[in-house]
Image 1 (spheres, helix red, strand yellow):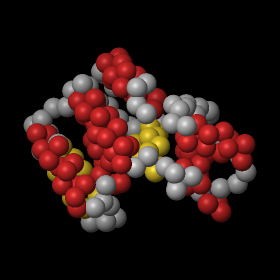
Image 2 (tube, rainbow, N blue to C red):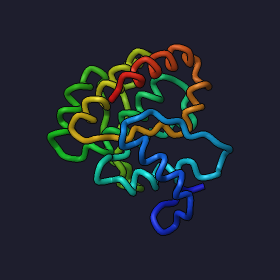
Image 3 (cartoon, helix red, strand yellow):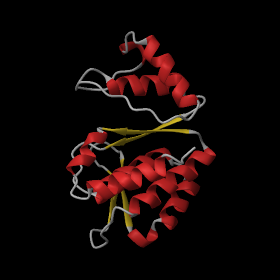
Image 4 (cartoon, one colour):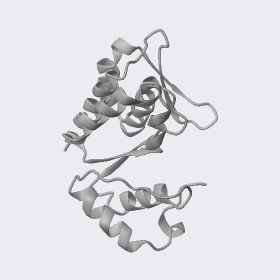
Length: 173
């Protein structure tokens, strides 16, 4: 289904209040439940309600197959938030060794980011992406949301990916 927010989002005020507390205190939180009950909408709506204090960085992990897919999704999410030229240039310089290719989707006008396929991204490269997000968080307070996180379990490098994510995320502020 599609994500709903604003006037299309109904109820769940207790959940919004509880999530808001977690988000504003920079606590890690897991939202789990059956498919298609509105978990993503709940997170998006909560972030929308506290938008003056936090910015949502949503990373969609649906149908990922590798660490490279995760890395590219993380970068795509970062590039969506960093729209001013100075920030984009800084990001491109930091990632120049991966030869990122930035473009615009002709159908949606959305920013696209991909990596030169001759550069294989290893699970340890995820540390670099997480550090990048942590640096962004110093400038603007973020809510980092990994949607469809269970998809990590479909990756061949799942153990290493999970270990890296766990070790880095537990120390992010």
